[in-house]
Amino acid sequence: MASVPCILFFVSSMVISMASSLVFRRCWRPSTSNVAAFLTNRSWAGITSMTSYDSMKDSIHYSGKTSRRSGFNFFSPSFSQGCWYTQNDILFCESSKFYPSRVAARRTKATLLALPKAKTENESQMTKDALQMIKTAIHAVDPFVAVSNRMRIQDDGSNLDGSSKSQLAVEQQSGGAQLKYDLENYNTIKIFSFGKASAAMAMAAAKIISDAYPKHLEGVVVIKDGHATSKEIQTMNEEYNIVVRSASHPIPDERSVAAANEILQSAYDSDEKTLVIACISGGGSALFCSPRDPLTLEDLVATNTALLASGMPIEKMNVIRKRLENGKGGKLAVAAYPATVLTLVLSDIIRDPLDMIASGPTVPDDGSDWNDACKLVEDYGLGCGGDHELPAAVLELLQVGKTGNLDDTPKSKHPAFSSTAGLTKLCETVLVGNNDAAVMAAAEEAEELGYHPVVLGTCMEGEASCIAGVYVTMAEMLARQRINFTNDEISRTKLFPIAKLPCALIVGGETTVTLPPRCNGKGGRNQELALTAAVKLREMNLRDVVLASVGTDGTDGPTDAAGAIIDGGTISRLASCDDVEAFAKEALNHHDAYNLLSKLEDDISLIKTGPTGTNVADVCIILVR
Image (cartoon, rainbow, N blue to C red; front, side, top):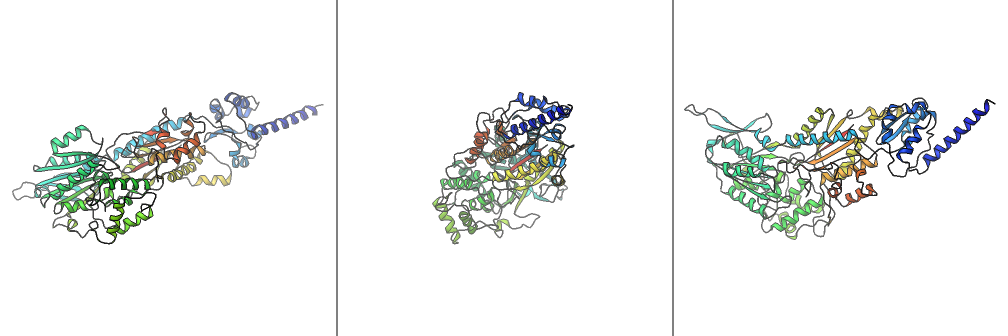
């Protein structure tokens, strides 16, 4: 008779095992309560005492998607006495008692339920940390500080009567050799400044010079609308005799033309007793805009619009731009000749090509010619009948230039770029800040916050949506360190992590977004990168990963956002949508990241810094715990 209970127990176990297999094989939509009951009503001493299971059981809920399970027997001892844990929003069971290698190798088939949509505790903290790193990065390239750190007035004590004469000393590199300008050699010092950092750069230069220079100081500063305070404008006008002009960016307007012509006229009026200090930063191409005859402003506006829509990198855009205008490609320096020209540059372009930043108005254009410009027209569909066709007048001008019937941009052999009898050339250029400084500052802040920072470089470029996939793939590989695999084949993947967790991947550069004709979406490259990453994180069920990507100037595309910050649950929190993933992908197809991310009213998604007064391209931070 003793064998009867054993037989009954064996049969009942088999029935339960088959039932459980059917439950998980079929489409099942359990609620929070019956899932908890399903797990805790079993008499397994092993599972109900598991700390990892107990700590998360109250927050289990079903994600709402139909799932087909693999038919693993969840009532078998290998699971009932195994370790239940969470990974990437999924509940796993791993056993160390029965078939450990088989269970570990097939762990994704032992999944049960997705965890909540809300931010995890890690994600909440990582969001704060990422925003702090962004703040530190932008502060590190403050243009006023950048200029002040490179320029100073010093006395050389060389006069015969024992008195000293003032010199303007400028470090060519931080802590490196100096350029020296004897201020007594100049009757006038002129400050020309244009770009998104123009106000702060001009203020710093004027403050340093005015303290030691009793002669005539004047200048013209062109700012993007809203990128200077009323106090800054008043100070430059009243204390430094510098006029401030506002203009449009990224598409130039009539004010851009008027301000550029005012600078060019002042440059033409200079002589050998004039020191011109040109402060140039990203955005200067649109703010300093003087059409070359016979082109009109409308031609240049249409050209800029086409160039932006084509997805062309900024350095290639400027190969074309500098041939269509009067002040770009070294022409400002030529206009000021024989004056001495000192240019201070805050770079917004990858690898800091000085002849490309703001289209290189004071740098000889040795790296491109008419043929290069015409080749770009062909490569990017800018010709007649192309997807991004340039105005007929522009295409005609480029063709005439290609035949050799128009002057090209000045080269190094022009006398404006010759050496003087002193220690400096007649025209010198100094890089005072760039993306590298911002990225390194973010990495240092990450280390302070307890992360293992990895700088991926400062030359990242390409289509924003493609680059996002690279970042998410790297995050997924880092996240694999969370699980102590026992399978030999899988364990080998954790031998080569680029950093231990928690990790901060930090990268600089500038991606692009290629827009189709008549695109009405709203967004920018950083918002598109972040939204693409959010979709991919959801597809991979990858949590405890945060990505933030911003333009250091505080502007991402034609929006009021600097960029965006997302995590693995961002897409799931679009609660107003039935199919959030499809909705997000549709927004990406229309390049409408801004409008989608703005729907997350109770969530930090769009990063809005306002104008930062600087511009050194973009910074992206990926945090993984």
